[in-house]
Image 1 (spheres, helix red, strand yellow):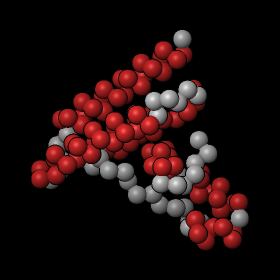
Image 2 (cartoon, helix red, strand yellow; image 1 turned 90 degrees about the vertical axis):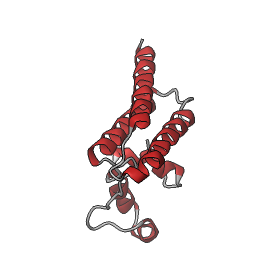
Image 3 (spheres, rainbow, N blue to C red; image 1 turned 60 degrees about the vertical axis):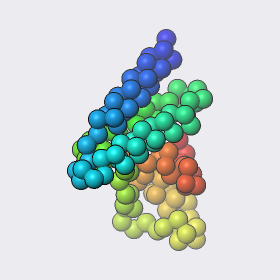
Image 4 (tube, rainbow, N blue to C red; image 1 turned 180 degrees about the vertical axis):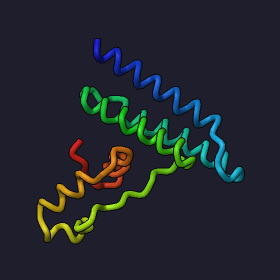
Length: 128
């Protein structure tokens, strides 16, 4: 029963994002079509990449990320992922190697939900 609920929730999110993508208006009207294309392309890409995910928690995490990215796009009127700032007293990935596991944990905890898939695809390993 829970899988039907997650399936329905996933399809609703997919349709919602596609609907918004088709009617998206950029703050600069010259960019409207580019931003619409980006939204539709990203949506199709991520739903296709994650179509075989069967772990309930992973599905919930992906749905949460999708909702967060959508809300960020609507709020900031910008469909592109927001930059991520590291918390104070942390090191970059390259510097963190010599500073140990504590830095890695701090960096991982500071990652917003809306960039987890992007980080994973770009080679930054996520534990979710």
